[in-house]
Amino acid sequence: MNKIIALIVILTILIGSLSGCALFQFGSKDTDSKIARSLVKTAVITAARISMEMKKLPLIEGVINTSREEINTRMLVQMKKRLEEINSNINTDIDTYYEILSSLISLNNNIVNNAFNWYNEYLNSPSRKHNAQWQINVFSFVNSHYSQYCNDRKGNINAWKNDFSQVKGAATEY
Image (cartoon, rainbow, N blue to C red; front, top):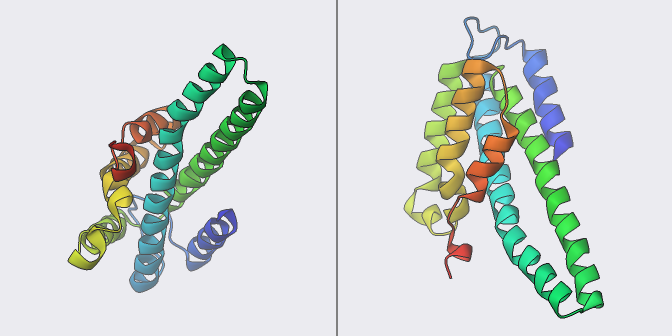
């Protein structure tokens, strides 16, 4: 995933799009639009993955606490290992997410906003809506994170993680 992001960033630089939320646009609008759509889609998918992983944390932590109380060392070791894997997944994906947003702000703001509108329409189309629930649930966070990052040029990873941990999804509502 990081290689794809790096390739997109390199393409963005080579095309010459400069100063995201940009005053200037040197690349082709069509090319920038395709890059923006790809980045928005990847950001939303990555955000959904982060959110799903974060929803696993309380369950795993609960099993760890129960295993400690019951002195089930084998289960405790397995769950601690799984907790480390989940945290590693979250950290890797949040780094990728940060890189994606960094790439998005290098593009013209109108083009990126059009990409967000395009992907929102795509996700909410009748044929996709049922299968894209996690992406739909995180979409507004991704859009607001982009806007915040575009305005202050600072990523707030802790706030982003907090947002993603609050997402309600079909898999967590039982």
